[in-house]
Image (cartoon, rainbow, N blue to C red; front, side, top):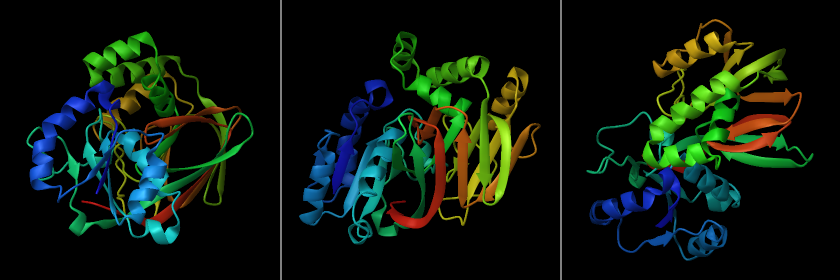
Length: 309
């Protein structure tokens, strides 16, 4: 077993959570020796070496960004190697959307959510994203929870920034930081003029927010009411367009109650492929990690990974 520990997750609180959790993890869930890695820069080489020593279980200990990093490392492996791996997770992050909906029997006693049942590992969908960055270079990344452009992406960009207010507030109150970033973006962010292609339907609009989801839980308490899960035949697509401040606020409040479909100035689809062309580079969020993109192509890869339950 390989465990990737993100010591910077949850505003730096993940190490303390890890130390609190370790005795229970070692007593109940880890069988024999395991390899703990906290150096992200060296992880790709270490993963390759440990795989060829016979390790087949890799665990992300951190938040959703840790899972996204781990996912993208695994997806760089050859198909025949990747098919032998099982991914799991220990939720040490601020939001832990990957673990949602939470299950009462998948927690440590210190309230850390888990995905460590390797014996019942199940196929899991992944989203593939090809995007052109602000320098004209094409990149390929993957997501396992959701991706978005618009105010959710911009709020994540702000949440991950090094602004003094963000850094101070995150160290004191993570959920408050999420709300601060969301509300600040709500009032300040402009709609994004873009052309969107969902399957064969083309749309020209001004995007307030566009989310493409595998898991309908998107940051904190926000959740779409899509009938979708990690093994669905389609991605869920939720578009908010041409919204002013009042409509944005109403939509955000509705999302905290798990309601989206049918709201004014929204559209939703189930799709396997989506293309987005904003009129200028805009933040693109993948499982909380943010890039700048000016052309985006999203594709569903169905059941491509084995994930612990």
